[in-house]
Length: 126
Image (tube, rainbow, N blue to C red; front, side, top):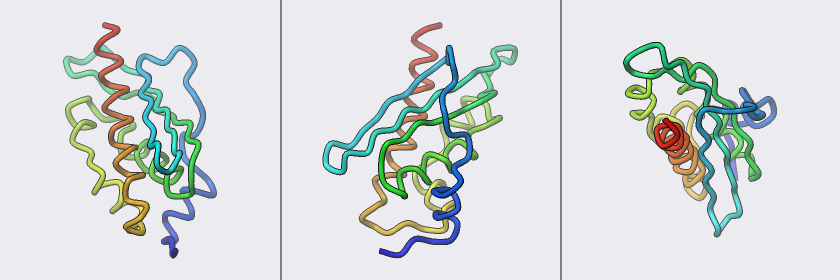
């Protein structure tokens, strides 16, 4: 299995890894088949009409592609309004990583779902 330079960089030095204490929203997703588990934490700026993801972090237990997808997702979502963040797709994540092997495509799907769940969690709490 061959990984791109971009994917390996995100795996070896992940961006925004960790957790946000007292996060405004948390999305947890997993894939039973491969065992990947992702937790996406968001800190929200509520001063605008459309809330903004002020900070975003992740904790991922999984393969190189899962960690890289989580890292790329946080780069794409940080600083975006909910409206814009919800338009981030698995394809945007894959494109940012310079492609992923087809067998690892599900990792980008998990990352997209994790962000949506974190936003849903925030909205449920408010």
